[in-house]
Amino acid sequence: MNPSVTQDLSIISLIWNASVVVQIVMGALLLASLFSWYYIFLKRFQLKRAENQADEFEKQFWSGAELSALYHRANAARHPGTLERIFEAGFREFTKLTKQPGMDVAAVMDGTRRAMRATYQREMDTLESHLSFLASVGSVSPYVGLLGTVWGIMNAFRGLANVAQATLGHVAPGIAEALIATAMGLLAAIPAVVAYNHFAGDVNRLSIRFDSFMEELSNILQRQIH
Image 1: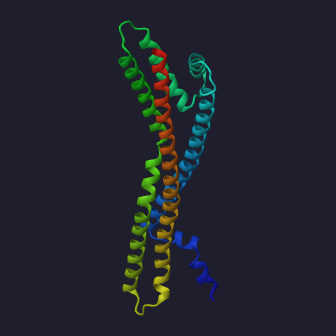
Image 2: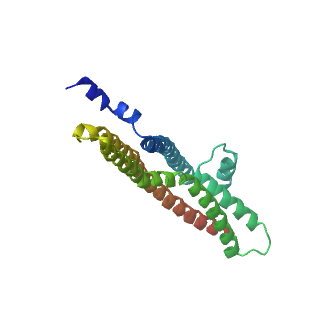
Image 3: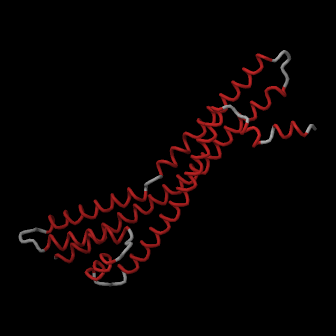
């Protein structure tokens, strides 16, 4: 085999000699892949930390500690977890409403639940951040790679117009560079899709856990009023 042919058909050579449009497509896919992996590692550590903080706070909560002591501890924490923030918001509102004269149980509990629900929504927005980016990369990257493939193949066949006798050697580099764009699109999409599905499941489990905690805390606070 001719060494020059092997060198010309190497991946680096094909990318370097690709048309401008195909290079732009490859560059965009490379950036999307890099950002995807950055967010994958970021979400992995964020969700693991949220789960560990929830475990620790629930252990303290169900150990029989005074709610007021837990509130002061959560209020003084530098980096409280999601459950601590929900508890802090609910207990603060509960304490404020019970001190107001003429407040019935329903009004107190309704205000407490609203305070916890507002904090819950803010925390869930934080946990769900960047998941939409992973979903977009997973769904769009194959089509972007296909765009580069179509453009590369089109240029390969356009080049045959100036060739008297067409051979496979004339179109092979153009088709090869086009297929690299497809491969890069898949390499960007597959990890993003897998990570999105995994993280979406983790967020959903945490959401159910937080929602259950709010209901349990509401029942405890309501019993305290009575």
